[in-house]
Structures are given as structure tokens and as C-alpha cells.
Image (cartoon, rainbow, N blue to C red; front, side, top):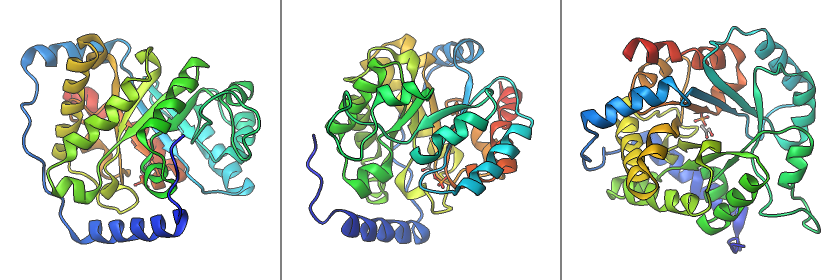
Length: 304
Ligand SMILES: O=C(CO)COP(=O)(O)O
């Protein structure tokens, strides 16, 4: 496993605070233009979206909530009107997953926010993929920037987790994304492609994988990527999949965007060709806002 940095939480937390402060004042530069798709690829995408590539919206509740607040959130989600042609998933903290599983409508699937790298055993504080399956959890989020940059998880460790989770039939929300300083240094694609390679080396069944592009400078900062910035990276990641995995996987894999998505900005993002949904943090804790984000699929349909 990856060695965690010694001064772990405090140095990483202050580094994250610095990054978020920097993000609040800096306007991230758009990376060098990549040749973006041809009409043939566009045609493949429309076919793919009409088939297996359903719009996908995940709510990452992170380390938030109490028994009471989660009970209220679940009741409101159960009562919300959600477009039918969207896959909807929520990721509560581990300790509330059973509560959520027992009270949430079957319309919404449940994800964990982490999992151990292999079979369970003497691993204090960890949760295994087998245990997730045991309580009916269908998904896991891996590679999230908070785990990469605060906890210190690296690509190798994340790749092991991904391979084992998939081997146990737990589906994967695979997160990638660059820091502000990496974007400003023109390294956005390099960083995302390196993270993609670590995932791809661990994945044999792409049908069980959703890619989440979450630029770190946009997470929890209120500074959302512009639709053009997000589209540019999504298209580049899809091109990477085409070259490095297969054209079929490139056209059928959902690539969702995360980072300060809210009820007001989701529709413009959803209109972009290569944005197949969202991974939502803060706004997923408010059921009406989360429902609006789920229902932004209608903006996509108008565009198509
Ligand atoms: O990290 C995120 C989802 O995984 C995004 O968080 P925010 O929506 O709060 O920026």
C-alpha cells in the first residue's frame, strides 16, 4: 500500500485550505486546446447516450449529517420528482449507510465513499467490498481528491481498491482531477491521463465504471468550471479512452463533472456533449437542489 505522509492530516488540511483560498482569487487558465472530436465521434456519442449511457447523478454527502438530518434528507429525496432516465446514487458516510438503505426509495442507489484494497480481516477501521455487498451497497467512490490530497492516497493504492471492488461486483465512480497549480502549469491533461491510466490498468469491466472529472480548485470553493473548461477535459478523457482502451468504451462510459455544481449552474453544464451527469457535494445535502440537478437531464435532451 501507499505510504501515507507522516504529518498527514494537519499539513494536508492546511495545504487544502491554501489551495481553496488560491482558487477563490485566481481564475484558472484554460489548458491548451485539444483537438476536440470529429463528427464521427459525435455520431457515436448520440447513439451511446440513447443506449447504455444514461445520465448519471451522484450525491457525495462526504463527512456530513446526523441520524436526524439524514432521516429528513432521505424523506425529502423519497418525495422528490426525479426524471426517470437518470441513474441516481447517493453516498452517505459509512455509519449511516444502513439507515439510508433501510429508508431510501429503491429508485436511488447507494454508494460508499471508500473501501479497503482487498478481502477483509485484521485491518482496523476499514470496510471491505464484501461487507458493502452484504448490506446492499452497489457503488463506491474512489480516487476522490479529498482522499488523494488530505489522506495521501496515491494512484497505486487507489488502483488496487478499484480492482478489488470491481472483482466483488461493486461498481465504481472513479474520480480524477487536477490541482489549481497543475492547471496553471498547463498540466491538466497530463495529471488526468496519469490518474486515468492507474484506473484503466485495474479495470476489466468498463460497464461498471463511471468517470468523475473533479478539478480540485472547483471542489467546495463555489468556483465551478465553466461548461467549456469541463467539456474540454471530458472530451480529452474520452479521446484518451478511445486511444488507450477502445472506441466502444470511449463512447459508452459516462464522464460526469464534479466541483461546485448547484441548482443554478447544472443546466448549462449538462448541455455540453461530453458531460454525462454530475457528482455533487454540498448541493446534494439539499434535496430540492439535488432533484434540480438530477432533472437537468432535460437540458441535455433539448441539446441533443
Ligand atoms: O467533491 C465533490 C463531489 O465529490 C464536489 O463537492 P462540491 O459540490 O461541494 O464542490
